[in-house]
Length: 162
Image (cartoon, rainbow, N blue to C red; front, side, top):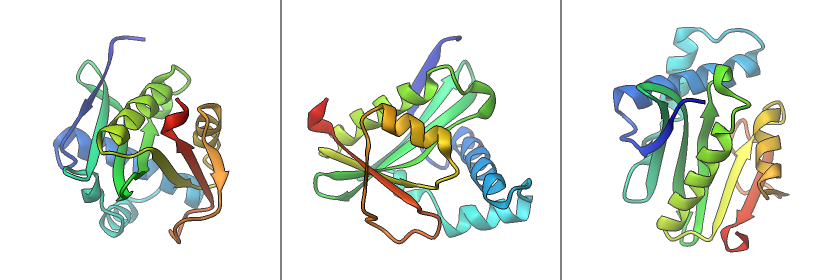
């Protein structure tokens, strides 16, 4: 693996917008079981904006290899002491190389920096790579804490356990 850099990024920067579009394309295409159209991606990104991943109560992380954005993760505070992991993504051509684990660790550090001692997330059943990553890193399934339209599985990790 070439040098990987994980940096906080403005969610509306060009590299952030590009990797977020790749994220939405990946999850939407899996959901539809076909390639999502540009119009479907535009709608999804409008209906579920990433603005909450901005300071002071959020952060957006961009994983880069050189100038190439290869992944992302976002964290936002849900309530005092509780953060939510959002937009966890590694491009399919870069998976299996430890980038997801490094992003997750950095996202947890960011959650701590925001004052959280618990990280929660929701995901879909078909996102098996993500679910495996979370379980491998100590996340446990919990009852649903939100009613997101695509949320099927909910996880939590107490950061004090690290």
